[in-house]
Length: 220
Image (cartoon, rainbow, N blue to C red; front, side, top):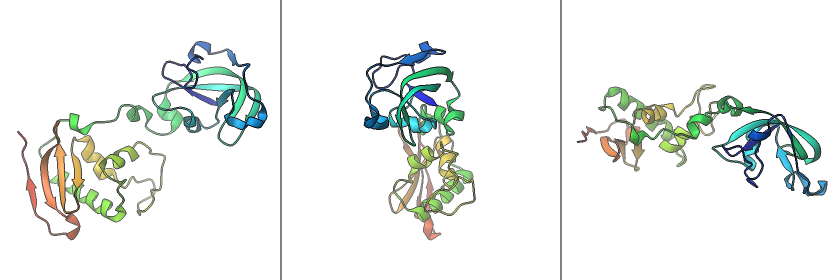
């Protein structure tokens, strides 16, 4: 079983129980609801899947392996106990959750990266991203969505687009993002922006038409 807490080890709800200070000990509560209140009533909660703990937690967080004591109620997501024995703190949260937690709490800001001069390799990545985005054509798959999706390598199949098993189909946008280059599209014009002020470094007309005019810009 797993329990997520605030980074300082205190629980999210009451902010009074310090799990880090109780490793090897049993934490108990006396003010708990009867079983008829179900898994969400008063008590100490834990889940078998650490990702299920986010129902009552958020990032950043700390994670602990626990053992339930005197179970009150439970369902497929979490269980409620009178007590929890704190076995250990888990520090490698990337491995625990199965996604890139360390980057999720400290995401890359492309506008903080000194952008390179636009070259053919960047334009090719933009073309690939334009093609992928056109096939999906969903507003959630903009540059931010593409970057955030890359933090979840455990997802092997993405909806609304055909791709090879295990391949992240929006990687061209992520590659640009990590270089400090952010692609955008207003329905007619594609642009690549970069630098602290998000200056336009490159523009091109709708690349889906296959015949477009490009302009490389130079920031000062």
